[in-house]
Length: 99
Image (cartoon, rainbow, N blue to C red):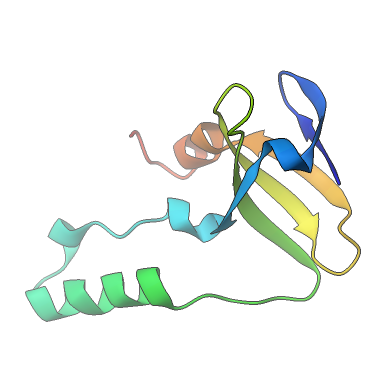
């Protein structure tokens, strides 16, 4: 599988490490909940509940054997066709995360 890195161009997927669902970018803010139980429930769901879709899915990939960048790859899990690759920091910023 070839991942078209935004800066480095087409790279073999063996240079990357798959890290799971890109929803991990949306980590809950523990201070935003009214009580500790609600915060614990939110973190439980964040850590342990994952979708396993057949079709288009956004995933986190780490360019371990390259520039060590984090990428969000939109990939069809049935055909392995990659339709979009973007830096994870840009996705996080577009969702309002500054760090």
